[in-house]
Image (cartoon, rainbow over all chains, first blue to last red):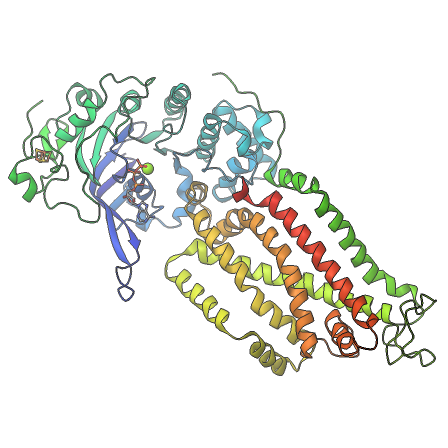
Length: 323
Length: 290
Ligand SMILES: Nc1ncnc2c1ncn2[C@@H]1O[C@H](COP(=O)(O)OP(=O)(O)OP(=O)(O)O)[C@@H](O)[C@H]1O
Ligand code: SF4
Ligand SMILES: [Mg+2]
């Protein structure tokens, strides 16, 4: 059965109104995102900084309530799951800043075992601690770490504690929100391999958010490219890396001459020239029109819909050349 | 897979901060002096064969001759000055620490909830604080004394009522930024409820600020108690407090300075100690410093 499905998902933030009298406005960030994720698979989500990847990731777990569309967990609309709080053990998240993700006042054993107080309230304190130590072991941290504090860890160790906390409730899905971008290049591969390892052993599904195309290539089965809150291309990994179809994806690819996880290149974000439109006043036509080399008048007036341009491949562009 | 070795020792930030505080000589000396004054105030009166309210008609307005039993002499009613000052200290110190504690707890919880929940609730809660801030202090005290018929309860509630506002504002700002931190997101993904997050993540992480601010709150409470008693709204004769003792002392200042110097000096010493302690705590605990 499909594990996670997004249907036309829209997400936004409430921000203070323009004037004192007007109430809060909704600032839309993510628009009409749809995809499905099967157990044990990895969906890579790529896009520039600020395009709404983290917002999407949080909305998938309903840490932010969507403003439109639905998220289905094992076929059931998350908005209607009774007592969703207790089922969160099945869907976890790890974060970009591994140190900020750990409460500096708690020991690692307490950080990792805390979710169990909600998910398995029957456990005794000692049992919960044993489970925390087991989870720390799964990410390669010895039991001696249990009584350490976050400030005593390196970034890579802190990220592994974050993973241990996600694992302790025995999840089916982990949303990885740029889990390696804050880490040294030499540590990145370690954490990525750990995630792939755990995926294989536990049948985890991953949503892997990144702006590093090389890392995404290494870990993903499918790739979804986002631009300004919209999906512009969605394809199986090998097909995507053989030839990206959307001009935006191609521009991202050109920023990564040699996909290689050990190199700092591969980061997207500074490589694209041209002015990025503001989320406050999104363009009426294609989200990439202001920077696209192929942009025509049609692109600026009419938004291209995401459609199947080849078997299994979706793209949102008026002028796709076949694969 | 290779297994990492743990770092040598687990030390919480709190322990590190405490250690830093202990290395501050002036603050540690202040702690000792303050503790001595507290012990003296609470145990000292037992050494004397009378209480501060007993009048000794053989010794009216006796000078400070350091002769047993009236070491610092007596007041116009023949009551022993030293014992009255010590008993007044019990009242002032109790109100000071208890008032700061209650005001602090209310302020911290209020601010933490407002900052974490945010949005409309936060707007409403903070508007209320602003309104209360604007309320004239003395009028409030008079209203409360009318309500409680004067006395200690009115005084205490007036003090708490005005002093919880500032900790609420300070903690709210910090809770707001903590609420955006990723460990709070992780806690929500871990199924924690809002109240649990406020109590287990937000409040403990505001503790450094609270301890620093709380140590400044104590002298503030003691001062407002003295101020109100000085105005005659607070602690009433014959019960002694440093405030009303200083008031009596000021009235007799021209003829006999001793009635002012003993309670005034002790109050000044306590305030000085508390300020040095607050300084040390700020150096040791304030995260903005490092
Ligand atoms: N709490 C918030 N309130 C209002 N706007 C927000 C909030 N959080 C994020 N945004 C805005 O939403 C947009 C998308 O943010 P998001 O964090 O999802 O981007 P991202 O793709 O994850 O970027 P990065 O790669 O830098 O992490 C940004 O323009 C950001 O300013
Ligand atoms: S629709 Fe037009 S502007 Fe948009 S990507 Fe395609 S060619 Fe470029
Ligand atoms: Mg992000």
